[in-house]
Amino acid sequence: MKHIQALFYGTLLLASCTQPTSRAPVKSCELHGDTVIVYPQSGLAKKIHVDTITTQLLRQQMPAVGLVKLIPNKFAEIAPTFSGRIISAYLKLGMNVTPGTPLFAMSSPDFITAQKAFFQAKEQLLLAEKKLARQRNLVANGVGIQRELEEAQMNYDVEKKEYESARLSIRLFKANPDELILGQPLIIYSPIAGEVVENKVVVGQLVKNDGASVAAVAELSKVWVAGHVKEKDMGAIRQLSQSQITIAALPGKIIRGTIFHINELIEESSRSVEVLMECENSDHVLKPGMYVNVNFENTPQPTILIAPKALLQQSNTSFVFRQIAAGKYVRQQVATNGVLGNKVVVKSGLSKNDTIISDGAYYLLDAR
Image (cartoon, rainbow, N blue to C red; front, side, top):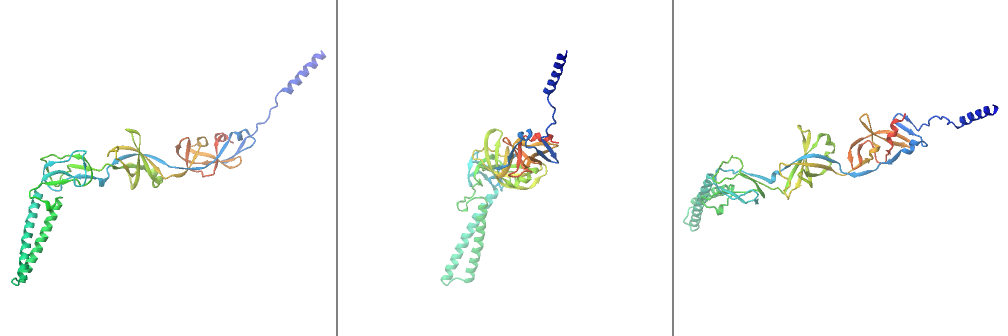
């Protein structure tokens, strides 16, 4: 019996020695306001990785919708300034023209009246010139009267002014007075180079001097694109330098636009500012009236990019943990401006050479 009792107590003693000893948990960090202190020997310290912030020169992009427009001084509506009836048409849609290319001819009563006045003034000038020459000859031979010579000279000067005025009237009709034939039709010419984009000319049509245009010529090798920058992006509008224009119907085609004017007034309906861009359009891909996609780009600016794991969200606030000393991190609120590739663009809140937690920051959210 003594041997059995000794064995029982020995077994209890051995069991008590092999049971684990309970220990108090080791604290890995502590919180002081917005600052978290992580103990260097803790397992938490090994899960945290930090990076020093650098900047990259990047262009900020702002997408918008644009409208293709004609350049005003490269577009002309053909509306005769004189009444008449169209008797011949030379133009065709798509026809390339230069300044002075004949478009159509018309019989104009105003032009006929101007022709008659011109030829009458020309005849009167010739008569006055002959009378002046005769009076000069008489005075030179001592048989003329000086007063009659002066009257002839005065009459000649008056008729010459009438003739010059009549010549000017003919030129108002874009006709050459030196090649004028009485009764010739009025020819309407193209005022600019380009191509005929509208043709409403009908032979026999009666047009009035205050009527609508009957044709239009446009130079489409260059066009304007009017884009709109929202009011919330006004801070970056002065840094805009160029744009990329794409068309939904032609995926993959990119057209460069040069910004040359930013409107000073905000459109109340859309709360945006109109930005005009000039675009090369030699292939006529951009059609006036077409809607396009515009991606505005500003001049390259030093930009801070951080890893997505560094950014935390809480109560509609974005923040990171910035290192202020070894093992000491402060919560730093930041403002972001979208994503570029696999990085987050930081608009404000951080500076170059700041050190932040790039991975493992979420472990600090439970710091007490």
